[in-house]
Image 1 (cartoon, rainbow, N blue to C red):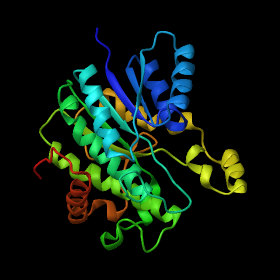
Image 2: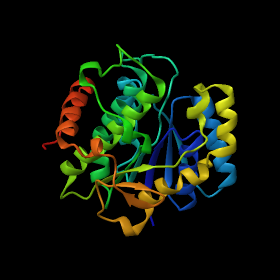
Image 3: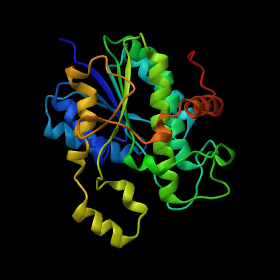
Image 4: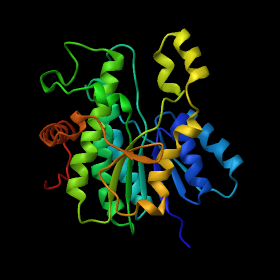
Length: 281
């Protein structure tokens, strides 16, 4: 029997690595999509030693570079003829405002625009699978956020935590808009809150906070459980456009249910990424 194939972004550490481990343990062939080749190979080797029967591939992907994203998709489609699961997991939370290779504010570029473009370009591969699934790791912090389209690049004002919440709201609006476009197809898309997890996202935080996080936050293994549930549980066949936490559906904050904002964000994101496969609303 042919193994199901999954891509996990940011698979070299934290929730991404635990998601890759869980999918490989469940019999998936897994592509670890990572930015750093050294750290990626270390993660792949460690997982391979732990799971000797797993099939693991390392592929380089910088979500802050649209050139890298398009190159990744070209390489992937040259090697594989379908994709069963895409887990958009990777994110960055820089303490100060920085920009990507494309000139976008880093959290906007890596946490939203990168996954937006990657997902659209991989849709043909997902549609070629019997039942493609897209999993988007968001966060409950979206509930306190809003999107200022007049300052989408956070040039006037940047706050690390506020910006993270904004991009997590963007994730949910993307899922909402994409689910409508995928209605009637074999591909589903859902989002999740992984819990408050001690991962490398906190590396920009002050040392006392990082120490406290290790004591109080949940583990990456527990944080990956809902990602794995959305990626593989048969009970979710056909379920799309939903938001989950602790393997249960939840109602997101009101801002994540605004279809007008979701469509405005879609149109803006397509323009900023030059997405070459726009879907009809």
